[in-house]
Image (cartoon, rainbow, N blue to C red):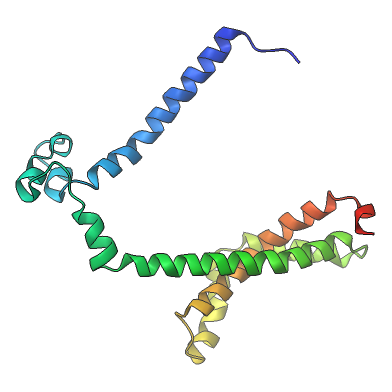
Length: 182
């Protein structure tokens, strides 16, 4: 194995550092602005108000404020949405991986031609816009009065993600030698 010249390594790392710095500016600017009042961060008079926090100091007495976070997490109860998201994410990952592992293994070890066609159908469902898949659930879930519940969201998300899980785990099991099954 040959090593690249020192100048090329320095140039590559310098470009990478520059790229990361430029790409991180919007995120850092948004984080900075989250500790300022709206009048500073969204000032039409001078964008530098967001740097110095003149209005933030006038309103809160300090250069920074956590009022935005207090408003979002406590007053608007964003923590409830965070807990719901965590429940849905953990449930969908657990169910999708369980079903996908079983299905992917079965399709990878199957010698029949139907396995290929099942994977093609899964690929077609994966290519469809998600709204077309969700629309099939709307009427039954509305009739059962369960639309908008966590369980309903989990079912829909598992159905949307299952084709991708099948494809990924199918290819994973194809790379495992069949001798290990015994």
